[in-house]
Image 1 (tube, rainbow, N blue to C red):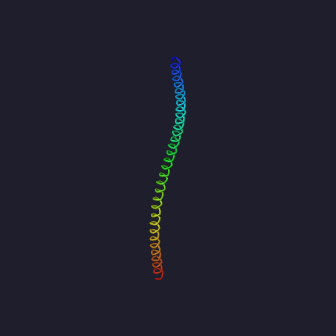
Image 2: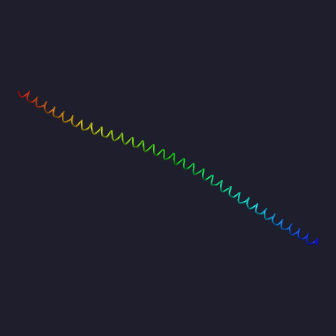
Image 3: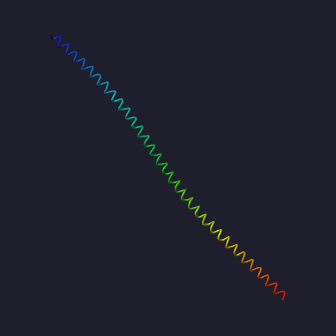
Length: 117
């Protein structure tokens, strides 16, 4: 009977040792997976940080492009105003040229009349 009880305890101890070893193995496995997850999380965090920096850089470039676009629009508006002013001056100069030519013709006509008399 003592042997049966002793054997029963031994079986129980063996089972406990087996369970203990399995728990240690599972604990090691959980730790290994946990470390992998930490590493992956760290990689994603680094990648996320890099993507955020790239996004900031792209935003700065977009703002620069918008400023350049506004500058170009202002230049085009100024060019348009200048072009219109030049056209106005050219038309006015043409009008003055015509007036000057009429006045010259009138002067020549008066001079011819004066000297013919």
